[in-house]
Image (cartoon, rainbow, N blue to C red):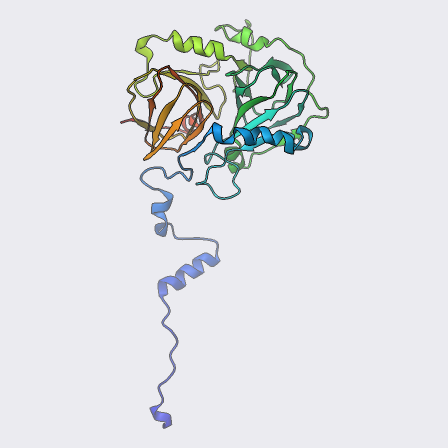
Length: 353
């Protein structure tokens, strides 16, 4: 072949747009117009998925954990509830909420510490254990709802004859997303007890407060909201206040502000009547539900979960869901959400269907 017949080598054509994007990426930038739909979808696209943990299937594992690790080594002997829709290794039940189940044996004390995440606790089994928060000690009974506000010293112990188990609810994923996590161990195993009579409930739980008191804290002054008082509130609720989606429902409140019990989480106890017909709805907050008494069915985003006492269920943000009582007796459920954060940022929406 002659020199003239040879074809000249040519470089592959370079896409001018791709060359431009490469220069943009090299400067730590990116084109918004390529990801606009992902960044701003028309409705929320939460990573968490509807899910259920059946107490009958996990109870033995919770109790077995007491044989595997001591409370001194564990600090908190808790099995976390991990949503399968979230990235592996993320300790969360939704993108902003955490849930776990804690067990404490007779004679044990889970050492005192404090942290910036807020915490809620709902007693599932047993009674006679205690929680101490900022020097106030309360004795726990089944169904009691206990608050542990952010950056308050707290420890747990068990002076009863049997194990006590409760649901732990915290805003750990939210705090970590905001890079606001702080943690500190108390120099002693237990925080000094200054009040062993649960006086906060008796002082503030009657719609009263000490005259002239000024509080600059954003959380409820009440440590323990007893199950008995919450049930009485449900039973005495007038028919005009019954929700078409949630039945008889009461919110655990900060009595000084009328707002949520903690600045980042609210909590509820509700009662569904046998044969009751309740409408579906959805809201921009994610929600964790736990059966307490009776039984029922949760229909959420095309999934169906039949629940019994202490089953835990996830309702993702903006997922359509409906509650159906299936037993012959009233059904009681406990729940908590991240709605206070959304309301504070003017992001909360709700739609009855």
